[in-house]
Length: 446
Image (cartoon, rainbow, N blue to C red; front, side):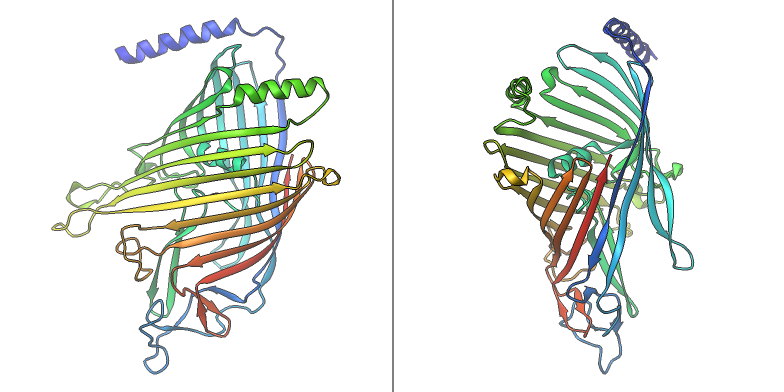
């Protein structure tokens, strides 16, 4: 109780001091915007991840194949192509007082119903209140958020990469975590490092002159889709920080450019470095664990992004992300200690806008290459789960993006997923290690 009273008193002093900083008349404001990722995709090589196996003794048994049996021929529709809607958000942002704001973001998504039919539905992606008791003239501020909160590591890396509508970033991407045979069917499970949103409390501190941002969050760990309150007695903890070492110089250059009625600067336009630590359970069931063991799912990582503007027109941007996992799963056998495994992923990206005046910085060539290993300690002999298996994967994206306005981006890109063994089956039943797709992207943000 003593510590609580001290914390409340300190917050009251800070809040009282900040009230005197409202130098202009405040008017409440509500803004409504939206984000949508849609387009068209084509299965250009008529292949997919193996889903069905021939388990007959005479024709199916093959010790050299990925699951010990030959895949069934013609197990999917040939020449698959489809228009798609990856995501649609409605963003409602409200500035209620100088210190209080809020955001509500319904997420339009798709689900498969009990009849196997894909249906449109909506869910809450973000829903939180901001309270900023401290905001100084030098740019430093302290903000508290509570509710269904964004994962600020994912959000900030997405801003650096710039093309979430093309593909999710390394820690948000659905990597293949396991695949196993059950009779004639292969069950494949995918997963990301952590959820892009979760229920909890976040404190954000912006340092003087906005040279760095620090986020510290306490979360349920279940993600924004799972409200199983009986699984979150223990909380997850996440801290992330982003440093902008050249912020002062870039701001001075931008201020000088604005006085000359310019909207860009030549030279270095962005330098960002960051890191994060996530420690917790990530929604793993805490009950019924043998020997009193517990799940431990910790994640660590770093990122960097650099942008250089050519003189007058064009730019180049280079960035990357490294993220690690350290996991412990309670053993189901009392005589066996808890099993541990680790995972690792690396992502790099390049964006190039030619220094040609007529392009007006609207045409970009993009390249991205990711690698991920769900278990760095395994020998990589089979895709049977976490333990004893490396199963390296890769993702390569080559694209041409066109931005006719600030709210619309169009793109054409080639995406290739790679695996360490032949987990991909062609329409004729032959196998290979890569899965290729062609995408036409439409990204709208307003």
